[in-house]
Length: 142
Image (cartoon, rainbow, N blue to C red; front, side, top):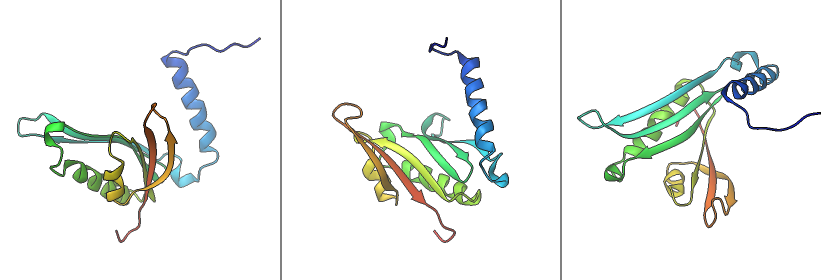
């Protein structure tokens, strides 16, 4: 008999490792071991973090999980600088695209302005808002 229950950290890592093993059998040899966490920070003169981008390189893309700029520094192009830098890194690492997600109360217009295109949107997630998924295709000349 089987049953479902909440897992612990060790079990979560086991499941993650098993999926990675499965995926490796289907991914081209030159991409199998391509994985790297990429975290970029913007700091003020005192060394305080005032913005950052948390992402990961996986196979032939970078996924941006978090892009945040302190409210006091918004409008100073720090978000644009972070996006530009992650795009440079993506091109240097031969990525073909970047993907990310955002909510309607965050910054969908910001990403559209920077050349990202909407590939999916979930309505009422969270209730009363939208959850957007964006992609930006990269080419050597851009």
